[in-house]
Image (cartoon, rainbow, N blue to C red; front, top):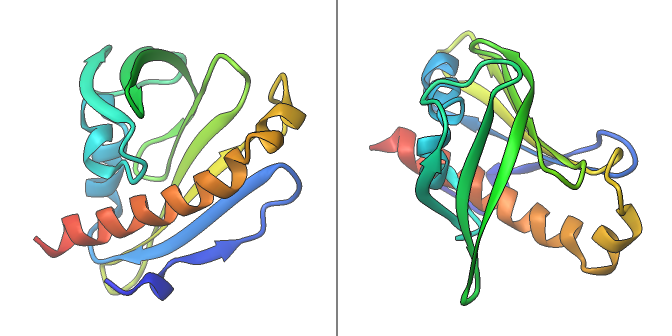
Length: 155
């Protein structure tokens, strides 16, 4: 897919959002992201590993732990599900207070508008997040994640 198929969406201060049309049903895409054991399939950052502790289908309030790797440094992060609407929205919060959100909007032609949001408006250290350039890096990674979903749907 072309890079320009990913659009920037304005969600206000301390939020980074990207959106793309994916040629797959919303329920199928929701199932992929509501299963933390499959997050590595959509991850455009290259940091998410397939080793996960937690349920295979998230429910509101669930916690899950994902193995990650940033460069040569492995680590684990435990997140809590903070919003969940089957087929429409899944969101989890990291210990630092920032949230990752996926929204799925079914389209009449069977495709889905997918929006990924990095929301650090309630983060404990928003200035630090900006100092390390996480919003810019996450914007690039989110675009890559959306392209991975588009490629996944093309298979």
